[in-house]
Length: 467
Image (cartoon, rainbow, N blue to C red; front, side):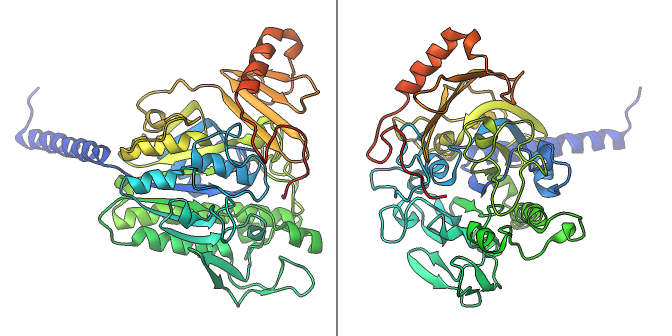
């Protein structure tokens, strides 16, 4: 069969274009990427369309998953806010982390954060949104923990108020006088104008659009869909959002509408970040991760069963079953992250620090609990992950572990350990500990060795911590 000159030139042109794209991809992969970590607050494993959600709309996150990698076995650092974020920032699981419950314990100068590691590698670093690892005038404020820029909430309870009258910029209090607070109910607005997460998105986009000659790390830590617990207690609806969006006419209670609207609004924020990267020509120079800090809550008037927010998993926020700690995780980065991949790689928040360090070409600190999963994130290879461990201190001392396909839950040192087998029982419905005493013994020994007692978290039942 003859090949015409035009056809030959067309094939040659296509081959040259493909080669150019491969070359661009190779060059991009050889340079340290910008890193954006987008964190939702109390978003359940099943709250996103690409994880099975059928009623709440998340088209931009779903498209992000189609263009990137969707992980089915990624775990948060804990089942509540502060310790989960501590694991994310420090590369330590809750057996060794500074913060293991939702109390106001600040990070200390000896703690090394991912921001410090990346700043040491030449990155400009920013945190926009919720922190929860150090209040004003403590060693834990973001600008003393490696962040060049900070704008948002320091205190996790303060972050309940989506229409707050003040935020923090670096270490300076910034007033929002348009948000007039209720005279009777603390943490509740009477005149509600500026929605904090809208403001966080604008600040994040402005940071991305800055002209700079070095890579950046942006930790965009949204508050939604967390409830305003104070407003819920006072007025019966803690799921306050500027509008109900596409759910305004649904025959649902207002808190349910608010919950759905928060998630869809969060989805639009993610889309705006990706659109800005493309418009700025940074999409091929950036790796974006999207996830949640723990499982879905049952606060502010919502019912986590209404949307089946935990998907096939058992439990919600504050549970050591997977519904409390397994979270959606989507990674995206054209030319750096493969498209349309669903990965069953097991990993957790404490892996982020060494992963980010590898992506940046930096050296991670020694002695971390986390391991780099950069190879899995970029589609190069699956990582053989060591066993995972969690402990949680709030009105008790709860532990969990995962060793291969075995999942163990301990609700009290005085109660027998529960044992479940994945993937056939990801709903953790069938406790098979009695059938596998040898496995239980191994898991118990691992959990006993996986922690170091600390001043705040000695490893016994304690007072109830701050929600």
